[in-house]
Length: 290
Image (cartoon, rainbow, N blue to C red; front, top):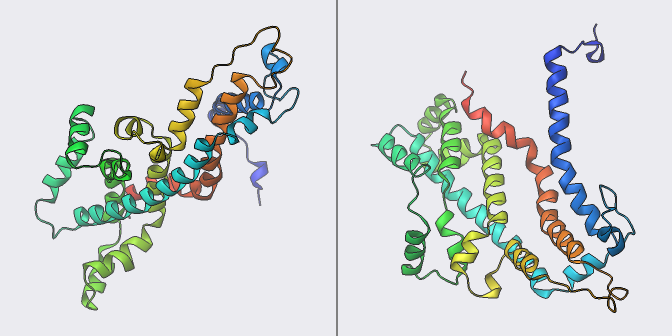
């Protein structure tokens, strides 16, 4: 029996492996450089000696970040906001996707067309702001949740998955006296967990990295997310050096900026490996038909 290790690679496979290796290198290099700068001393940074490995190891940059109470408080707020946002938006997307996948829903194609159009046509930030303001959501947490409640892209992905479920399962459930709610939570949702996990990941990443809605709708520090606090910190960092102070300063603006960026990346880097196996599977499996 031939072993997997005895299998010869074609020229195309070798080229794809080479391309993947280059893409991985291009993706990781900036991240490794930021981590190295965040852990390097001021002299090494000033002389441009920091590449992918820290020089003159120090944690002063991280000490400066953790000493900022707004940054630390916004971390817990952002985690709670992201978790609540993901649970609520996923639940709403499941309801909408299931309804649009049922043949008993009249005019479902019209509804789906209208939803799809919103992916290509956007009214703009001014109408969005006026709507949020009229609803009284300015300076509330709801301004960061309700406007992005359902993503048309995620809705279409989940609807496609629901359509791929064998209809005989629903027919058998109906014969046993099961209603639509029972079919949804006993059949559709359990069989669609890969796709649901994928859209949860989409929602989580979009909420975690979002800054613009915080800038537009929130004026109180208590509603600032971690990403926005990091942005404010990066914009405000300005350290002036002169000959008398140079020897006393242990940290540089580049060091603090890099530490703040790493601090904001870590939660997603910890969370992603647990759901990444569902990422590709959930996006593609909905299009597989028997």
